Length: 71
Image (cartoon, rainbow, N blue to C red):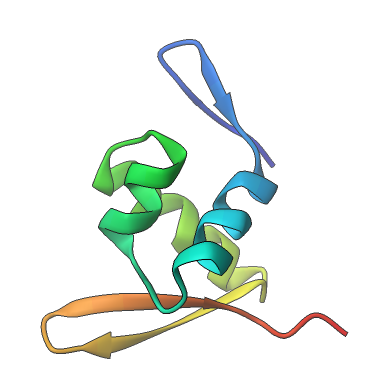
């Protein structure tokens, strides 16, 4: 699934790469890496979590994201 924002298309792989590169990645770190708003990244990361591709946990007041181990 891809996300479109003002004519730009961001692939699932771009989000997964951003999480991998920043693990444990905050939503803002992923948003900055992909080039979307924090809200846009949060929405897409939650979709990826529902699909079982990433997992999240609370760290203080922030969610942090990790890619689910790929076997």
